[in-house]
Image (cartoon, rainbow, N blue to C red; front, side, top):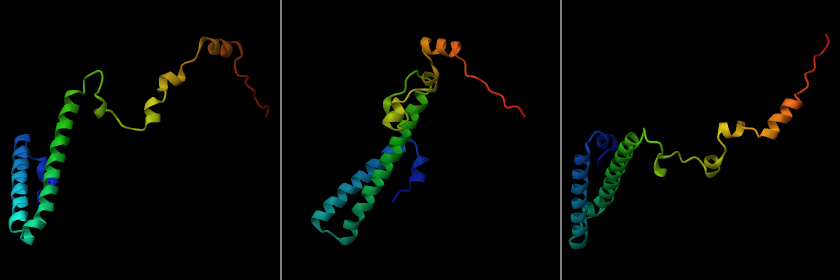
Length: 121
């Protein structure tokens, strides 16, 4: 069984080599299951499948990180690299859009400024 922290230190080529080795091992375990079916080999299938998933996860994370670095200076990010948040938050007005005022609103505020009161001590 491979550990994720060990996989993170590997290069892309090493990861793909490990992946192909694990897939070959899984295929041979499936054959062994059909032919003689010793309990040790049948129980090993689950561990190999989990290891394949770990390798693929680390590989995909590294790829996404590489794309993120490459696209860091781009004007627009691809949708899968953008912050997920919630649908409502993504559609909400920005701080600048919230603070904008219409011409009518500006003229009303200029004509009728808020009244300031002072309390006599």
